[in-house]
Image (cartoon, rainbow, N blue to C red; front, top):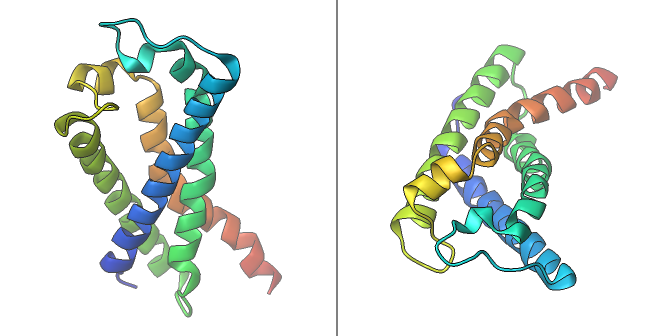
Length: 155
């Protein structure tokens, strides 16, 4: 089955908005509860104590939300053979990772706002977390595929 690009992009943006809100809320709420200090002037925001304390949870959020949206994408898929499903899973993974990298670059590096970062801060200071987040997004369709197999065998 061919990738439904419109559906894939719509669900990408829905998931992206949700994970961005959840990750931001996690960091802000943690900061309010613990009264964690802000990053010192001239220090990358990704090196702020509150951000460093919560960024592992951002990856966890990704590993929960993205597979759910992959499952939503495949929900209407009926009558696929396993080869078609694997191909579509690979295509969805590549579309989502390419979209995430593009939207992150535009939204967090190019466009200036209170949460924007320099390329160095985003791609170097934010390691290994940004890589783990991208891996989580990429593997999410495969997580959905793996989790759906036992359910299919029970039918």
